[in-house]
Image (cartoon, rainbow, N blue to C red; front, side):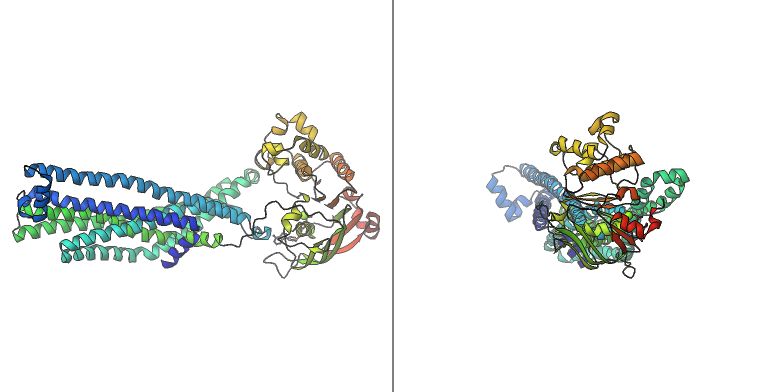
Length: 591
Ligand SMILES: Nc1ncnc2c1ncn2[C@@H]1O[C@H](COP(=O)(O)OP(=O)(O)OP(=O)(O)O)[C@@H](O)[C@H]1O
Ligand SMILES: [Mg+2]
């Protein structure tokens, strides 16, 4: 329990902590006003039951005199009105405090999910290789909900309710210590026993809920992401079945949590009611008259009316904390992932002499014993065009990821003009690169937004857009065939475009900023021979005035490269000009 509370405090920003304390203060003030409301009912009921008190009871008599009343009835009316006003005011204040409370809890959800997204996006690329995107989306969008509803709100309410109980208890103790402590003891031990009984179960269903939520998200995202394969293989039912189980578990556990949080109130209410009846019977048995009994019942009745929901609130807080602990644990851990300092748009790092790989080896996390690249020595002089070829799986894309600084070599260094490329320097390096990945990821947005990725519509330069699209051989298609030209939306992942059109938009994206370094990973693999020829021709036009690194399968693509590196099983087995490499590896020329 203490650990959960500590974690909860740790994930709040200093600003949020101050707000938390403000909300808490408000809630405590609300409690004080409420208590005053309860106390104010006592003189009213007392005088109502026994009007003679106006003359007998010294304080009341003084008040009665001071206000200059003529009859006890007048006095009773004023006392009643005052008490009602206080309760009314307390209700108003309560509304305001409730609003502040909910606003705080829900805005924290917003704040924490934003920070979570920010933290994830600041992780190194390699971190994502071991994660599932649906799982991360789940944490940002769904787990954080647990935080608001099952942790923050209940904790504040728990403290507030704790204060209510304390105030009411004090009040009752002043009146009759033995009775008060007895009542508190009974209710307290009842709740304690219930909590002990459900504690372990709440913790377990909390963990199971989190796991089921992960499965739910992952299955839904896989099913919808692979819709083509699923339609063709008619495996929709399999996915629905796979989804049904965790989805049901998720809902069942939420229901169990709500129930376990709610049920005791009925039990305790019944006990409270029985206690009140017992109290009346005792008083009657003692021979008290109605005038004496009424204020006592009023006091206990009102105190119970306030105290029972409060006791329930405290209990529910404990139960929720227990249930939400698994979600909090996870969010707490993720929010404390190391963050890279944000460097606002550094100046591009433009290579002046060469890009080098010096003794670079790389093994993916989790496969440390099987390096994908081994002792690579490679030099790319600036403004030259370099081709990297090799069989599938030989490590070409991995090599590009290292040059891009997305991955960090396990041994050796990537150097630009002899300066090692470190994660800190990578942002500046990225600003001088245009990169076409093997799989182009298109946004469900316009062609223009896809080419000028990350820019808002006002920021897009139409001339640069057109130049990039022309070089990628896609301009004519965009203008002549698409209904709204550059403003046509391409659908999710560019589903409304052909593979070749998508690829050319990817190439235009890399060219949009007119980068000094161009890195292409099988950038023309989806194009027919003629279009490929035209794209390569356009790229060759840049030959000599920018550094180009091309990975290709088809030899025709890399004929005009200044230097070729042939990769096999993660090692450079040959390098030289096109004809040199081909002469030594005649098998390469086979289709
Ligand atoms: N995230 C990863 N974790 C572990 N191994 C990986 C990971 N990504 C790639 N690999 C492995 O690294 C090796 C090289 O992959 P890479 O994608 O670099 O090959 P490639 O030469 O680009 O192949 P292709 O021509 O098919 O694109 C492969 O054997 C692959 O299984
Ligand atoms: Mg590849």
